Structure formats: structure tokens, C-alpha cells
Length: 383
Figure (tube, rainbow, N blue to C red):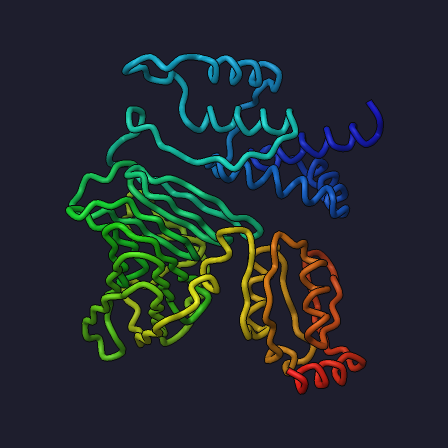
């Protein structure tokens, strides 16, 4: 085995330890050293996304033998499922074996999560968290599909048994809801409710931002909450409409210890029980501007760098700092398709007078490039 293979093997081993909560201090130092290389960081992120897609977000102290795990998975995949047959292992165990198998054979697969009704408690709550630098996709118990953007958490019951199919969101998600007129699908964020019966829509509700945004692609959606005068409002949306709920202030509170039996929804930040908002409805929007993220691309149209910076922070798990505030107001129009961070920045550099530099770990510094300012002005004048 050559040095490259040794390094890849070590990287895989340390990544699995990191994801399963078994990384020692010496392991961490070794992993940090490996991740200074961009290629290794891409491999790490790929393994991490696979791990996330299999819902392995809770640390475990169990250790698996990778060879026997791979053989076990192969045997299970070849078995014919017998009627009423129950798996003797939990979904998390199966998912971990699958994730290890993927690493062994060098193939990246984006898993669909399904929770086995025969093995779950109907009163239990499922929680899926997609950390910064990742995206994920799941299938809910009713067959509805959900794409989760970076920095997003979704909570939902293991089985929808009430009159409404309630889910709780912080972050951004694209929903493709299974039609069921008798059981509306309701997305909750504080006391704001976004109700659908069988449709496709995008919801953006990050606590650190001062708005909640719903974009409707297909079907009908109803948005309700309380306005600034604490009066109830109900907005019925049509396709290609966007409803923006402006909040009075950002919610940026530190996490607090919450007992499991408490029913209040908790993510990385604490969401207030009630958020007064100012509703704004926009018609005939280009929905791709608000949904392209789920298809692994970005479509921008006159988007300011200040907004793009926030998106870069989430997608690439970095911190962006501006050395010149006037740079924030420069705009960009175009499409990114699976570009690396360096490629995105090089493209931005073509149409905006930006100079970029990575400083420290995960900190991107953006500054004005004086040589490019005049070129940028000529470009904008000729448009």
C-alpha cells in the first residue's frame, strides 16, 4: 500500500471516529493536519454528507468491524423480504453499516431516509439536523419529500396520527408534500404556520435572519400568524408567489439545556413562542432564485454580495468578513453549478471588484480591489 493509500485509509478512519464521537486529542490533531489539503477536505465532506443522509447525528460508542459489516450488508441486500418480516436491527445500525460500506467501495450515494413503522414508537419524535457545509434529503412517514439546506433542523413525529401532519423547522427546506386533503401538512416556526394539502414550496426561516420566507411552486399554501399589532392574519398563496414575513428583530440566543419531555421546539438557538411579523406578498417571482439550492446549484439575479456572503458561510462552513462595507452593495447575476469555493470566488471576481483571502481556519476576507474598480465601472456602464 503506497503513501497515498495509507493517507486515504487514515483519513477514512479518523473521519468515522469524528462522526461517531470517538476522536481523541491526538486523532483530532492528525485529522486537522490532513484537512489542510483541499482534496482531503472534499473527501471528509463527502463522507460527512453520507453520514448525515443516513441520520447518524448522535454519537455512539459502538465499534464495527468494517469487513464483517460489509459482508453483512451485502447479505441483507440480497435477501428477499418476507411478508411481515421485521428487521432485527435498528435503522441507525443499518445506516451506519451502509455508510461504512460506501467508504470501503469508494462510492458516494445520497440516501433517502425512511423510518420503519414496525420498529418505531408512534409517539416518538424524529429530528434531522443538517450542519453547515452540508445538505440532505429525507422522506417523511407519509411519503412527503424534504430537501434540507445547510444549518437546518427539522422535527416531526415518527408517524402522522393526528388531524394535521405537523413538522417543525428552523433553517431552510424545500417540501414536496404528499396529497392528503383530510390531513393538512403544516410547517411550524414559532407561532407562524405554513399549511399545505399537497404541493411544492420552499420555506426559509433562519433564526439569525429577520424574515421568514415562503415561495410557492405548485398547489396552494396558506400562511398564518400574528402581525405587528398582534392581529391574526391568513394569506392564501398561489403558484409563483412569495410571502415574506418581516420580524421585528433577529433571534440569536445561545442554546440552553432543555429537558426531553419539554415540548417546545429547540434547535441551535431558542425560538420565541410568538413572533409578530409584517407580511409582504410578491407576485410572479422567479421561483428558481429561491429553490435552486436543492438542485446543487445557485441562480442569482442582482443579488448583493452581503447576501451572497451569508450563503457562502452556510454552504462552505466558513466565516466571511468584509474589509470595506461598500463592497457589500455590489451585485452579481449568474449561476453556479457544483463549483468549489475558490471557483465561486474567481467568478465573483470577474464581475465585482473583490479581492479575497483565506485567513486562519475557515475565515474568508473580502476587500475592494482598486485595480478592478475602474474595470467594473466600465462593465456596468456598458450594460
